[in-house]
Image (cartoon, rainbow, N blue to C red; front, top):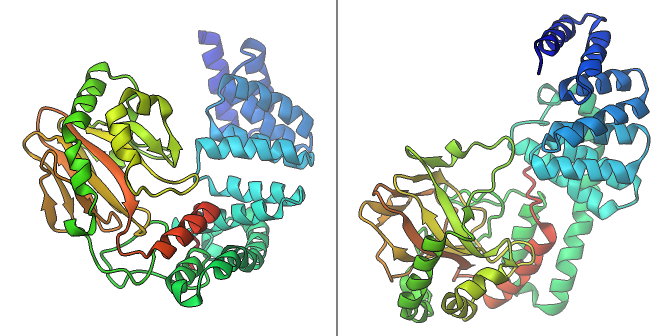
Length: 425
């Protein structure tokens, strides 16, 4: 940017900061010298909306998005502008883009629900409202007048009305097919878990040290670390250790297919999840969110064959999640809680340097290469690698062994259909 453009932009910012009416002309002058200036386009789009000229706002925002498509605030502004023109499909697409970049932008999800509702997509609208309300409330927002922006109050009140009506519909849609297949006494714990997901009642662990971030399934034993005898297939998996370790070694050498384990949103900071001088946590995924990585299975056929023989959690869009987990030298996975106690997390350590461990509550598990362990990650847990070499494990999730077979089938359907609708009371 030239010295002249810098000076023009600084002057425009001063006017805007002081509420000076000259700001509009100043930013327009910036555009005369730099037609793709995102800050000027954004400001002038806002002025256009305030002047009831949404078509002009769209022109500015379209240019800004070509330059900066990774800015969720621009997509949100585009969505609001499309809403002003009652262009509901276009507004929906804009808010979906916004939420892909910033999943916890609560107001954008509220607006998405409004757009879906205007298109008579009522089930999707209800889910969007439920998720917006639940995530905002979890963050301490929208709980009362003091935590609710005045300009959103009517929209939030409407969302609550729709969500409350929709909860019962979702509940019946979930439970009716299950009641037709299974006896009522076989679904008692499932029914309670579903009521918790939908916010009809508070369902939580009697142990305050267990805090799932999404779903608590009641009535399971208090088991931070599971007994080995609950997993009769451990022996078979360990029998493939040598072949699996060799394929993991080859992946580390090639480095193809490794990606960051953490999928961070725009407002997330790696430092909130990882510690250490140069923290690194990478993964070679065989499954992620239930999606099978066929190329990775082909690269590691022995590992693939071993995995496919296991009783994996299979939930559409959610599970299994299986990978070679590579924790870099000097890295620390900070204490955190997992999503739900319907699953257990299994580790088969492959490469374990000294000074590496997993800690679940007060139990420290050093990890022995070739020996499986399993734990419930809804208890506070952490892991560290204080060595100078990477630690590698085969990480996978499987069902909590204390679930019945019917409960596993039922919860696979429940989670697939509810996603992340966890709604606190």
